[in-house]
Image: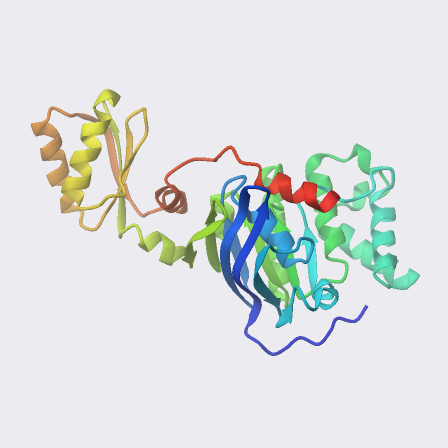
Length: 334
């Protein structure tokens, strides 16, 4: 199947003010995205943040309540048939037929995409080898492990290798070795001309792969930039310390914010503190202030900020109890 001619724009995705409402719930609440062609763009956020709903809107699987978006300069509302020829989508759940083998699944998908019998078999062999599934090629999918199913699902979405590939949490449930292999495959996709928009809950995955990252929380983009830009927003270094007495956490947090001149000090109920620092001498001043208030530390270290700290500082909370993306799946099934 021939892809439509893409406009020579620098953007694979241009989204402005995307909104999706399910009843009283604004699952997506004004999302803006600019994804450069030929890049890996990470969309980072906890469960229920609106990542999957945003992906399904961009892939024309859901209609937005408001806002606009273009894929290679094609409007998702006015030209959905063209957009669908330019994108491939791999979701969080395998879309293969469990009663068939991996070979049979890939051949069927290839034929549905317009490949000849010969080309379908050739492409199937290539993908099975690429995703380390050759030895299990004739095994029924129902006997596959979760990781093998995820690899087959991604392989199926890459039969035609579209210009834009949406990967919605592609490594969920995979073991470390398989995750690493998947990362290598994603890098090769971009090296051979595709653009990848990757959603993930894994901070290390975004850190390893993404050229730019959008942090989504409660349906909104709360931060955007390169990994280094996001990390530098916390200062040049990060202080980590453990209080001997966790009961003193509230007063310790107040002192730290005053001495370090920041309002981004995080302290857990167990007395573990994380705070950005611009000058290492601030640590000495902080420890002296702690001593004056009879606050003692069990351990202390200063290191470069991590993406984990960026996310925690920006969102200020853990994973919310939210069903935004479940709502998206329910609407698609209706």
